[in-house]
Length: 273
Image (cartoon, rainbow, N blue to C red):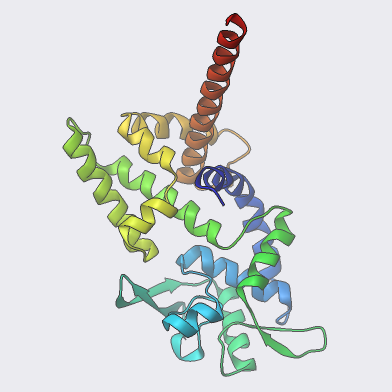
């Protein structure tokens, strides 16, 4: 996917996010361990922990695990807290998350079915099989009717985290300070996502957030967009998410209008020649 197309896709994902969350709550409340409940639980953990979805091939060759490839030995649930191991920038770290009661119960029951993988679901015949990244992506497309994948959660989270980090930094008065602030914000996001700053900036932060900050408009735009967006139908998004979505919509619309005007100008020149 081209970078421009990928980041246009971020807006579509953000618009679909409220309905995704509603469907997750509905499916996580189902009885037993049907496909929809287990996959909803995986997606819920995907969003709340920002862990990669994972796949068997990557786990085999890199000894690095994602949500669908974790083993029972990787997961510990104690009361309202669950711990999962993460590799972050080549160092072993632990992330501790506060899971919902529904996700804890699903995780415990899935683990009791089979000792090898911590993510399992029951088939129509009552058997148990592993959950794969393909299952997760198929489920997301099924509940949204759009080409949404597990990786979209990390891209959206990285974009929102970057906007919030930049919004909290002091204003700048030199090009050198802009670079320092951008670097500090990206490093903060990369620590959350478990990627290097270079990969984080290239793959997980919408460039228009950075452009807005460099233009000196990010703080103003986040405030005004949050106020207007929270009065709209997107109230089911978190306030910071609504603000970032409105910011991206506005800037992408302006970019499209600038392209249209330039195309019109070129057409006029061609007709005069």
